[in-house]
Image 1 (cartoon, rainbow, N blue to C red):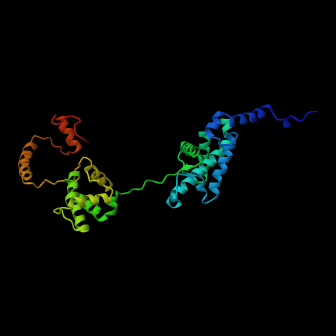
Image 2 (image 1 turned 90 degrees about the vertical axis):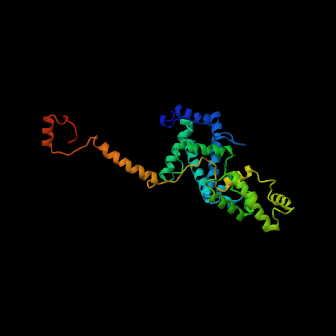
Length: 307
């Protein structure tokens, strides 16, 4: 006799297994999960990715295995390290659910959503939506299974300002003192006629009247990688020092109430206002009985006023 019916593998379950195997070798799955090198299908790619992500979560220094584009450990901030670990946690959870769900639903966004809900139960809520997790995975697979963490560009001053801090502060002070009429031409006049001569006087005791003054100016500029200090250079300096060019907006209030002309007009206006007041309507308060009496006599419009 044959085996009991409940022990035989059903045709539906067999088809389900075959369907799972077919999905992992499909073009869609390979395009989504990106197998590399000797990985035979998308499922093997997921398993290897999960193993890599698990190594990040198991080791305090494990995040370096998924970081690219960074040179020194000292430059990376604690927040960046923490963010990398959080991304790995979300991706590991999403891939864990994808192994089960993708052959059935074939919806990667749904897997990311389930991962978010699972981590939210554990108190982790870095990911704001499933699309965020999907974007993290795109970054992870695009860079050969790593996150491209770039060092933020440092705010560096030009050599002239960097090596001459006192002169830089003098430029800032002069600009603040002349804000109402501040312009590139004004700053250019200050730098060429006052700042640079003062620097040469201190460094090599050269004044504008000397024959060697022009040569000394060129040498000073050459030391700092400059050929000349033109208006565009000064404009860039001013932006780096915190100044920007925009339409001027008045931010002050002028109290003109006590001006002689205002006081004179005020007296004449009061006299006119008293005259006009006789022609104006005036509201008076009366009791209800008196109001009804006035309405009955026709002295007041019916239903006028407020009760």
